[in-house]
Length: 130
Image (cartoon, rainbow, N blue to C red; front, top):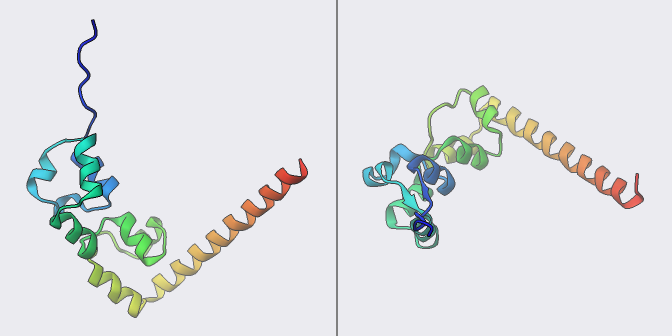
């Protein structure tokens, strides 16, 4: 006879990463409690007010900040941004972008264009059988 299965759980850091929130800004009970898969799914489907507020105003973790600014996480580091930013701080940067942000956005656009070119080339090769 097999023992009953224990539900899969997520550590708070993993859950925060998957939810796109900055863990230290989350409520204490979220930071200290593992979540079951069902609890995590419930948070995604019907987020409580604290989660909706964190997603809306921040502070946001680096991957979210980078995505909102249209640059890479490495670009954040090169620009000297190491701390989480709020939505208001991100908006300020976008309204009056410093030189490093303009350069990083240009770099990111070039990287995306190159990735698109390579994908088109590879798709064309697949069609011709090369």
